[in-house]
Each structure stands twice: as structure tokens, then as C-alpha cells.
Length: 354
Image (tube, rainbow, N blue to C red; front, side, top):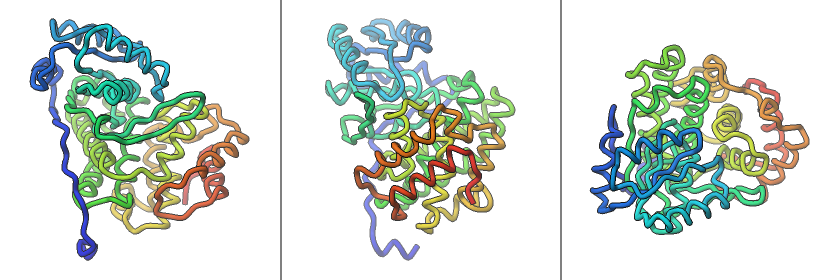
């Protein structure tokens, strides 16, 4: 606690959170609470029926639905969604789904000044952040702005009960990455660090039970709670090496978001653990070293372990390492292109980090 003498800044948590089971039924009240009356309901094509059902439950508060959200938030999709928002005369967005849908809601909100209600159905965790990653012409760019953060987030445990086991695991590892990067961020503070550690521990305790019994509502609630805590932690701190590499691989090579995070996580945090003392509690949570403990945890859950399984070639790793060092960013351990290339090679092979 001697670090307290150095001081810290905690900006507060402005987003309203409604957490529980059956909370989807409160969305209409939340729209009214924002003083809005015409919501554009967003989803991916796979969740179009759920979006239509939600719009029906909202009655006159629903202006229209748009169910073409895509992974990595392509700008051309956003442009179509913004047009749909205007044509419907909407005054807010309601995003039902995972990171793809919530990302689209953020993209509309920052362009149109719209209020947002996010309803996450995975554990990806972007709903509590002011971060927007967008893809155009094979490149993913990331920016932060207060207009990007949703005004309200509705967490409904019941919406996660049907989440497939593999997606549950990869989405959760994605969320754990948020919490870990928040711990060694240059602008970390005691409040977000407490939330990050508690969130990571909630995943450690709840995820094995969910993987074994997907319908376990108590375990699902624990995991969703962990996702919220880790999302808040990342939402108020700076991203580092892990998220940089995930964005490079997703934006430039089209790798699936959650799987990419899951595979990279043991390697990126294992690398950074040598440059910081802020991961001691994570090592204790998972046992042994940070990288090795996380790799064992992921393996036991049946998570993907190799970037090669996502279709990446070794030559892709050369290009990815080059892209990753084009811009400087905060990281607890100095790194060079050769360091990143070696890290990616280990992740490509699926080797256990020491």
C-alpha cells in the first residue's frame, strides 16, 4: 500500500447497471428513464429473432430493428446502421448481443449522439467501456471517447444460459484479459484493481462449473458478475500489449475475436509478468506462474490454444509483429519486434508459457 503515497485518480463509474435474472423485462423502463421514445434494436443475424422479440416487448418504444451487426465493427455496416437509425426516426439504440452488436451500438451512438442501452449476452465485456474498435480496408483502429460508453447496461443471467460451452469459455477468457490488463495499466488505481482481482477470481470459481453444467444459474451469475467487474476495470484504464495484438490479428487477418483473446492471453500476460509486480494475485488465483497457470486453466476448460488453428500462417506472424510495433503504446515491459514475433510463434504452436 506504500504506492498510495504516489496518489491516483478514480474517475467514477457513470454507467447505470441493472443486474439480475429476468432483467430483460426492465428494458422498456430504462428507455423511458433516459427520456427516449424510439429505440433502434440491434443484433447480429444469428440473434435476429431475439431482437424482434425484444422490439415486440417494447411496443411503441421500438422504432425498428437492425440485425446486420458483424465482428470487428466494419465501417460499411455502421454506415448502413446509421442510415437505418435516421430513417426510423430513432432517438436511442438498444444493443442485444455480444461484442459485435454492442460495438455497432457504440459506433452509432458516437456518430449520432444517441443514448445507448446495452444488453450483453456473452462475457466479452465491451459494454462498460468507452472503447470502440472499427475495421476498414483490412485495418482495425481503436479510439476512446465519452460518447462511446453506453448510458445503461442490463445484465440478465437468463440470457446467458443458452450460450454454447465453447463460446462461454472463450468469451470468459476475453473478459479475464480485460481485468489483467487493467492491473498493470499505467493509470490503474486501487478501486479498479480490486474489481479486476475480484472479477478474475469469480471466473476462476464459476467457469469450471458452467463448463460442466451450462444451466447452472448460480455459476452463470458468478461468471456474469466477473464479466461486469473486468469490463469496468478496463473501461477506466489503458490497454496494453494483449489488446494491441488481439486487434492486429482480428483487424488485419480476420481472426475471431474471443478465440484470439483466449489463445493470446497466457502468452501476453506471461511475457508482461516479468516486467511488473502487479500480477502476484493473478498467479495465486491460478496457481504457479501467471502464464502457465492461465494456460492450464484454459486447457482444462477445452479452450483453443493455437493460433494456427485459426488459419494463421507463420508468414502472417511476421507481418503481425511488424504491424504491432508501428505505433507506441503503454506496456509494463519494454518490447521489440523480435519479442512480439517470438510470443506469437509460441501462441501459434500452442506451447505452454513458463
